[in-house]
Length: 317
Length: 78
Image (tube, chains in turn orange, brown):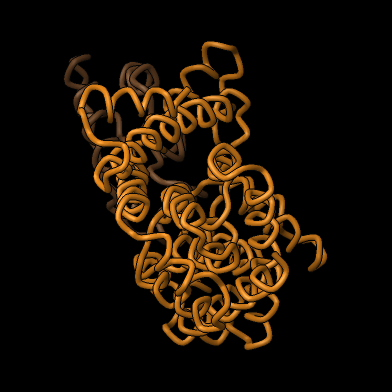
């Protein structure tokens, strides 16, 4: 359906040649814009209707006071199903610390949260198919789980800013959500507006990069250089992804274009994770609560983890 | 006079929330005092982790995201 629509618009209305570079790029762009934005609206609305989006205040109550493995399991899975804005990272971090939740568990949550969310997962299934979606989600959960454990080993408590330990968190008596259908509908619409308003630029940039790659990068060059035979493509993809930032949904069209041209699966997954999870803006926000040593360590742990994931998948697939 | 506080560390949504409340108060002809609370310790003291949050007369009435117009009208009127 989207394919036919994009063909009609790119080749019919705009009169581009399907075999030209520009034609291929424009067709890709139109198709992905239509497909991804329709999926975004539908998925976020449906999640809002179900009120499946868990508030950070409640996450803290779920996780606190549990044995380590339970707390980590909850932190990783709640991080995966909650699309928090990175501006909530600081209050979340402080709230977790104040609740006595171990820092390693908090890091597991902070790793999982930007990398995986249910909206991106559904779009992954829609664009890349359920197999790759499952690979990405499982690999992300594993990295978040072990990443937090490794961080704990380095005793990151010593790097937490002093004022964080002093903060007392009050108990908010938040009003009960309106659970009538009208209330849910309003809430869902507000969620769509808020989340799409926050991420649409990332998604458009992602689709633009994907379209350029799809239209202009020759497949022969890709299979020769990025086909997965040489060991250094994975770490190179990870390093490339560190300064680049997009949201988890925005990297999907880039991955789609890369896989379409024959870039190895592991290399693509490593780049996706690195772009989504490791970002300078997020680090600068977290710098308010923790010193740069801990952030450098986090970046290093994640870079190693993503490289291992990439190599692993390139070896298997 | 009603005291309304907008909790948030200066993100764009917090600005919008403060403006929406100010506008609603003006429309209703109610005088309110709006204060923006940006200090993270003060925000957390209210138990709010998802910003923007809204506090009316020292009671948290909202957290996370820009509030809906109906909600805002109810706060300035009641």
